[in-house]
Length: 197
Image 1 (tube, rainbow, N blue to C red):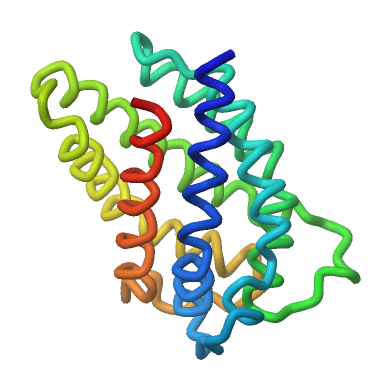
Image 2: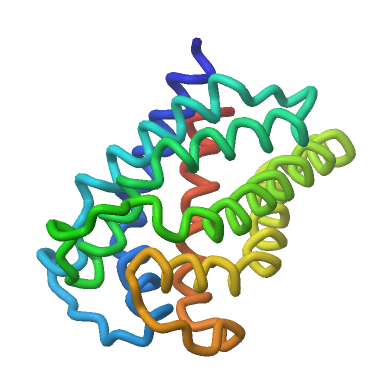
């Protein structure tokens, strides 16, 4: 139960802390100019909080560091499926699109699963492997595993964002928003380590 509480706390704190970067990344991925200011950069934050709580509750209830591959696949799949409607509303709010007339909040979930499950599994499996080999460098191990999974999945993340926001798919290999995603995820990992270590 402690792992679940710490996981939810870490995910929430990190998500709120890095939310402006996430908004910039989401807009960059679909080629939309970013409007700065508190109101624009925090649009959809409530949906983000609901998404993170749902995802973290399921993931950390299942994840076992002794079986990182199997449990991260199951946990991330369930977490993504349960939190996807909130995540869709978050992305639509971030890019200034209305979601009131939508009737399918699961549109594009296949791409979110194709992106999210391998990304989370690669991240956690590589991190646990590195932690066993290099126990003194857990923070560096987290940055290496996160960076590796980001590079591997960024085109899929861009495609997932385009589908969720109903935006025509451009060149997903341009790596628009990659720097923001890289900074956001590594700040997230550093923040989580404060809660989970």
